[in-house]
Length: 484
Image (cartoon, rainbow, N blue to C red; front, side, top):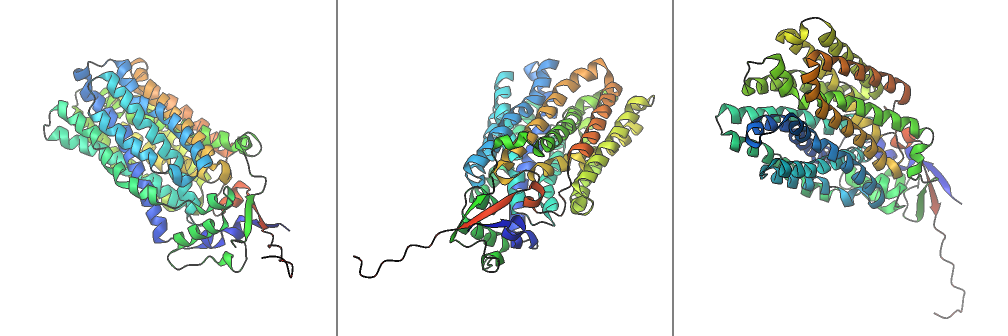
């Protein structure tokens, strides 16, 4: 007779455990990729300024270089998201940062606009793969009460990358390094942190949830739980509840296929996770990648070094603390509240810049409001849109659900990075900020309408996933006197 068990029973020890060293190892391994992602995606804004006279770039070429990695990351997120559902988390994890590293090295060796464009595509595929894999793996290993904190910490490493980019650029510019050398060093350095975690990612075990819900591997799931909790631990579920006994076969109850994402309630959730991520990244990447151009229009007489230092100050003072406030409060006030209130304050800050006369031309009030928008972008949807898709889909489609959401986000980032340089020329800073205010309002409404609150719930509970365990039939006894 089949015995049906909820996720709370199957993964009780994992869900109720305190954070272990293995949890933090997983977070560090995933987080270093996001440090690299942020560095590689945002350093290009400074690089294209240096390259404009070297490669004789026009506005269209600058926009394309600033945004092509983001477009390529859409492909990377979709492909790696699907592969991790089909082949397993472990079999693909690490390949994405290897691609990222290769792309960074090749970018530093570029000899023309076309070659750099092609190599930035390689970078983007790796970045997209990282978005699709790291959140899912961290979430599937996390405990219930700290899952938001753990997955959020992975993404918060982006904040360090945001600071590292302009900091390194400022060092090279301030030291008088030749522009012909500086841009190559800026791009090539992005390979180092990614290479450092390739080995660690390849060594991480398959997640217990994928082992059980997709592969039906009871023993493998129990082993992965024990690995996470620490040497010598034995999951209580294996001997008390009896649901992790190797003498059973496991299948997900009505194991979902990819079409599940077009049915209730997952279609609305997909619209919520993908749509809000798309809208957030239009504003975030549109402003961030083009920050040198925005600051140049604000202060036409300023040098590239001065603008780079200003961007560094904004990231360090406003954006970086926002990441960690979000991480701190993720499991206290919830993902949904952090996301909608972040969108709301972003909208108010952008509207103030766009609509209050003179603000877009006055450095001090502009930087204050711009900084507020950055703080609530991070203490808001930039962190939560990363966390949400890893929590609200069943295991068998969690990778592609996350991949579609991340892909839509990166497509929004591509559009933002592509069009903002042109909008700055045609409608100026005020017009750009008015558009971003509208985008943020739509993101707030979508969050309130489409997304549930997964805080404090197990992954199985928040995704409605049930696991069926079927005891294996005992071998038939050998009849007395039968031949051996």
